[in-house]
Image: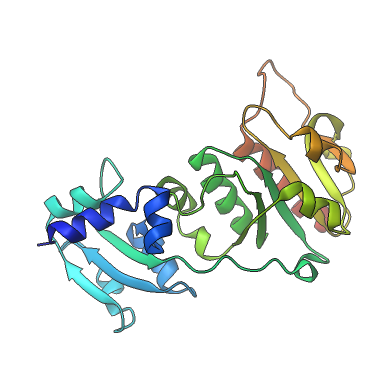
Length: 249
């Protein structure tokens, strides 16, 4: 049985200010916990019911496993239907962005993405297509938000996330800057070359004017129907797919 203080701590991590204060976040579900356990992230504890996947119990002996009741699991979970395992994970220092690591590759830049589900989808998509770096504006949603972590399905453990003053960063980097804009060139006719940053904008407002000024190549996904806009997570997936397709030419 978990103590009231432990339950209070774990529940508080659903809020950013307490994640920052304690330097901790939660990961839920067998698959996601396994991905983080096999990464460079440091797991402080794993709380689980008797229904835990036995394979998880064979993880490093340095991890503190605590079996809890379903009732306690429901108290600390952020999900309506809690899974059988929750890991308490240490937030690492955000990596220092070494621009040389971006050379010869593609990376994603995010300008004010606010929806946790979209953020999680973008991270998972980047992981699928082998994009290792995502550069975020300072006001982009926290990647350790429980809804973001859940939506990544463990891919957060594989992708490097950076928070920067985006306009300043884009103005200083010597790489092609592709911006997702409604009045850009057709994505299916765009030559992306061999490296660059794909800049995706806020769900409601798109790219900010100061970011648009820095875009070197505006690119659009041509509309074939009547929808007013395209979800930023889906749009990012299409950009990633086109970049990957171009690499096979």
